[in-house]
Image (cartoon, rainbow, N blue to C red):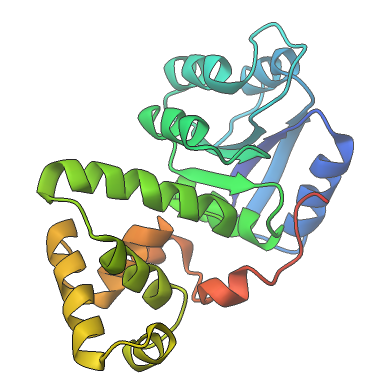
Length: 234
């Protein structure tokens, strides 16, 4: 019986990026790179030729017939609705990330982050989950906070500060020491923030902020560990 593998296509106008991703996936037998492309014209031709489960594509890839960015991804979502998408980008501004989220693209990687995130994002996308690399998760967190604030009341600056420190890996005691507040105050602010966001557990809070479907990704690294890894592009 043939071993199962997620069929992956990679699109980027920088050959070094494609080579780096192919190398990062080379030792993982559960992933098969079926084709690569350097612009949207080549990408669409490849998608029409090779079965593909997950597309890993650069956001900015000019020169092709089908454009790039939101224009390209909107087209791909309509033409190939069963193909999951992981977006690579050097841009982490809220407008760009928000536009991708509106297209139901929930696996986004910054090229300044590690190649280690690519496999996890592919697995997450294949399972219809979420994965944001560290440089993107901070922006996605703020977008989710904005959405949560409109629905359930805004987090205070102190509540947001506590949540961000907690998700970064600090305990309630460590946060209290760093912020010069009592443990009771920190615990109360964390509980209040979770209530406003409609979250019931610490695990839910971490998943919410990081934008990660833990069951889909299988990545148990802490945010601090994630940030220390080798970047996709320098």
